[in-house]
Amino acid sequence: MDRLFRRRKAQPAPEPPSERIRVYARDMEISGWVQPSGERITDILRRGGELAFLPDGADASDPDSWLSLVSDSVLVVVPPPHVSPPERRLRRQTQRVRVRVGQYEVTGTAHLRPGFEQDLMLRATQPFLPLTDATLATESWPEVLPYDVVIVNLAEVQEITEI
Image (cartoon, rainbow, N blue to C red; front, side, top):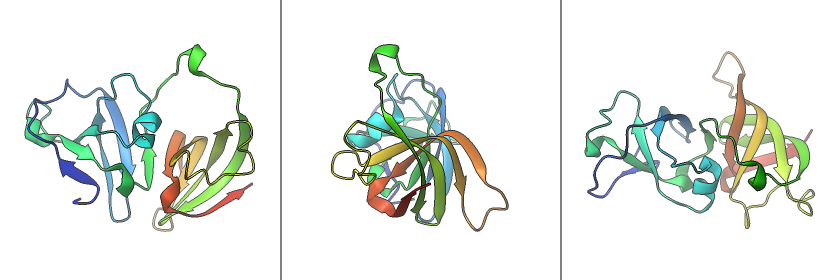
């Protein structure tokens, strides 16, 4: 847990958590709650911003229960539902892809800006890639898990293929 989270600096506890999130790293999976303040989790991760995280079962009113998610250590994130305002929605090219990151395999639809269709590994400009209508699997699970959105850390991807 040391690399995935760090203790938050002395601050009051954020507002009560309202958004459920699941985070997958190399050696752990953890569920909890975040308070994204109306922002998309993808945007927070892309800029390396702090994401206050409350693990399941922790006391939301205790400031010491809240951790800061270290985005560089994340492999895959299943974010809370978020509907962007219509003015933020841009027309994008879509591609079905399969991504291998750590022990996980994610299949989903990438929504790419025009001109980036041939560059699925947008690491320099887009370190985290959200995939919609996604599935998440690993050899150790008995079934494939379906999700509306799965965010993948492109810096940790071993393989990405168009399907």
